[in-house]
Image 1 (cartoon, rainbow, N blue to C red):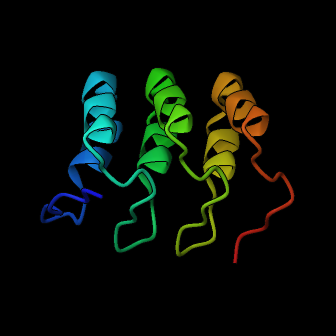
Image 2: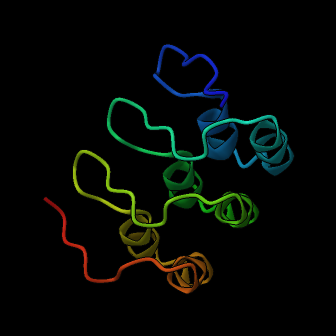
Length: 107
């Protein structure tokens, strides 16, 4: 499994690509073995970065590669909570359709 080095912001290459909606780079990194569920120091995953920045295509790609839809960051937030707070119905629906638990509460 490839995790790749983390940058000074403690992001893997996959997280950075997800943050900026670089879906092709995300897919390439995942095909090379990047850890889809790697976390930064705040416990955030690439899926969370894609959700926060409303990158729907990137979210879909991460889900296809097995991103954990119920991962909780250190503050207790899940991808679904982040999507719901953004008001993006399409991403929220995609997460729910992928098994996101709507009953989680923050810590």
